Length: 298
Figure 1 (cartoon, rainbow, N blue to C red):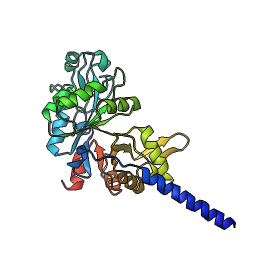
Figure 2 (cartoon, helix red, strand yellow):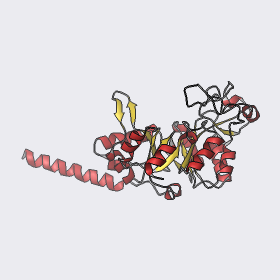
Figure 3 (cartoon, rainbow, N blue to C red):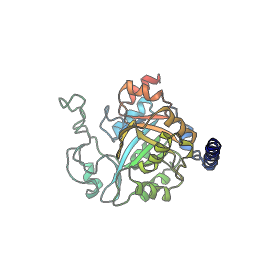
Figure 4 (tube, rainbow, N blue to C red):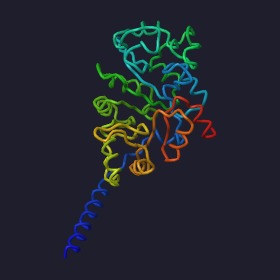
């Protein structure tokens, strides 16, 4: 009798699981991903270990290597110009100091954006005094109109989502941009303003998938509307659990079953690239795109 009840409950649970899995809708296909090489070589900030990051020199250098995607970070100046820079201050990457959002575009252009870069622990600084400046996003889009761009909005306040959306539309790049942010409010604002542009997901959207996948229930995950990619580290730290493995073959396989693209950041060693590529991921975000291209024989 007890055995029959247990089997009945298992059967019921299986039916519930199948029903819920049947109701899940995969991520709709987006043109951004259709023309990309797989796996994609995504040049982090243009390739920060090769060039001064987030500069025209870096983007042009990455283009010359024939990378698939140019990745960049954006903030806005006090006069509303969207510019490429990772930090909210200019202190780390230029010869100046101060908050980006408190400086005009003209003031930013006076700074040396090649000042910090060194590949020999500070023995030499080959890009100093070479006239390298902080570029605007408009300049990048004008210079590389046929390139795939991975644009990360760093700034939260004041919001720059509408300005970013407007610029993408002005350049006709809605099918060439993947928009990312670590901030849920930012990504939600952008999706509402620019629903035609592909976006990656934030941690709060990825975590439920990781949990379900870990419990062998990954098929039950329902992706958010207008979200297309997981851009994640290989490992991450979660409350209570501590450091966990994010990328596994099953994680990648189940994400792709939902039509979710999987990119891993920031991978710079060849051995790590080889290991991660073996899981079936769709792309790597790297400071050394030259090494990944060589590994792929491209």
